Length: 219
Image (cartoon, rainbow, N blue to C red; front, side, top):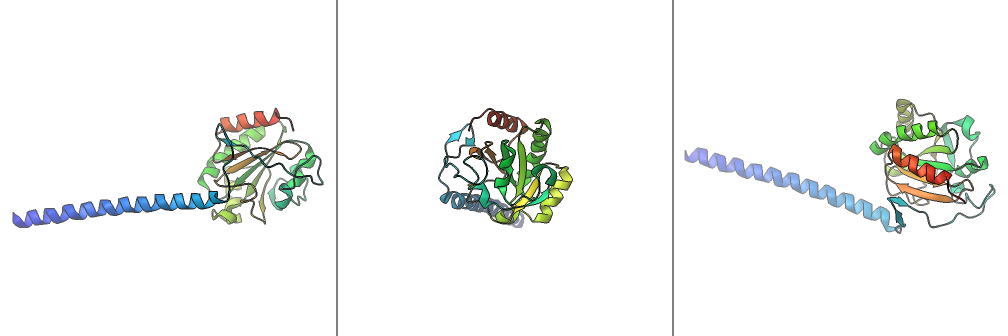
């Protein structure tokens, strides 16, 4: 009986220790996540929050394209995965999209981003149902945020049967567009000025709301 009691006590201690180790691991992961988020946000002052959508407060400077925009977009050189016919390849940089005179929606995504996998079919549906009212392009930034390679991105496009234009960039847009979460979607007016920036996942209903607001906006 004494040995069984001792053995039981040892087992109880071991069980408690295992639970504490698991709890400690969870705490370490949480602290690490907070630290990473804080580091990303350190150089990015908070933007005004409007129903979960961050509004860009810095206007775009004049450029060679019509309207006052694309100084920022001109700093994002692009290489297309697909969509040559829509964007009229070659596409030197993001600013070239504004020559079409339509609102432009830019979705920053990555092949190793689970939320991007969930969101992209809704973007495709919104694009299909728009009747060409706006341009949509997905820009893969996986290599810049540690969320997959170009091969991962192409596999994602093929698997999800995405047909809207998609590209990757050779210069990180993370600082320029304040990408602090994945995915991030930037809504541009036809003149290239930033209408809204949404950080994080969008449902189909939210995408519809944002597009409706964008189409009804004035430069």
